[in-house]
Length: 157
Image (cartoon, rainbow, N blue to C red):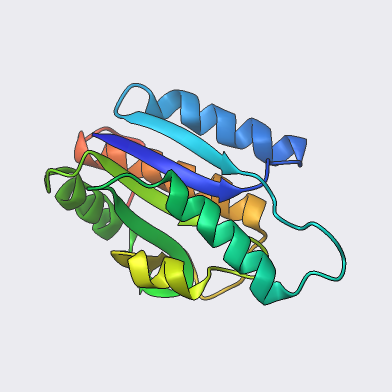
């Protein structure tokens, strides 16, 4: 199984990018993992939030393949402890899907079509973080989940 983090636009902040790359490299020991970058669809200042969400949503949906499981990182999603998240990842990995896609929306979130296609939503916190921070927090939590599942000493309760 492959796990993909799909994001809108590149990670511009060098500190965030360095942290993401650190955990992405660590994840290679546990799972086939990649980051899919969807081009930022902001074409002009006159573009509405709805139009931008629509274009970004179309790009995300075009990336998906039949049988992919899509999980949105969304403020209205279910929250987990790190151990619960590890169990959820393990359950999803055992489900038989070929690709598990976690998606971070653009600055205005997801289109209605993306919500309709999603299999689930998770939230990293009730707080709001920048999209770049969410990327870093997610890859660290995915790495943490892998170490929990292997019984390695990274996570402490």
